[in-house]
Length: 242
Ligand code: SAM
Image (tube, rainbow, N blue to C red):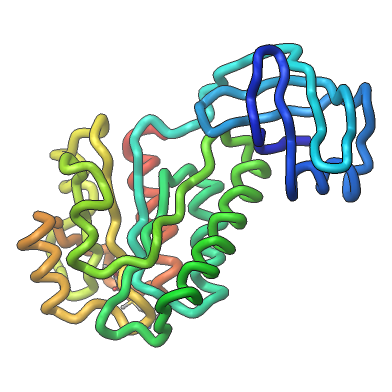
């Protein structure tokens, strides 16, 4: 059983809130049971449950490890807002595959509009999905879901060295492989995927001009937005052996 650590001390960590409740109420674990904790630092801790309190569970660390489970290349998905269940699917599968993070993007043809508190709540929900998927796939760092962004905000959300790719169905010649060959896998890569309705040409031009994004073809068949996102992520991670 894997848990996200709420607070880390010397040879001890604490689980609080939903992590504590899950251990106590759902899994019904008790003192003496062994668990694994992670704190998004890249480490994981084998531990034993020491005490179970009303607000917190205390665990004694038995062993610390740095498993080679995270992808070496940081790959981000930037996806045009699609319908709820499609975003959730991409977030869950993307986390399992090892994406570093996801930025939900407002685009011209989006059928879904997310603003204000509704956007904030949705991002919180998506982050929880990342947490669950990270546990299931034994990751030691959760993928991060960024606040819903507009085009003009993108550049500042990721490091300036980020290399951008924009799969575009009207791009007929440039292949993903030929672009990845020129990229530096030590620097982050961000994949821009359109919403259900695709990108408008003006958005592709904007990405090319402001982010130096490389437009690529994913082949002659038009993929659904969520398929395109997961397929491109898989191909990029696979290309660099991650
Ligand atoms: N209408 C379908 C849907 O409901 O999802 C397909 C939408 S497709 C236009 C959505 C996005 O997937 C595009 O903006 C593009 O980023 C990507 N995409 C899909 N097929 C592609 C292809 N063959 N080559 C490049 N990009 C593709």
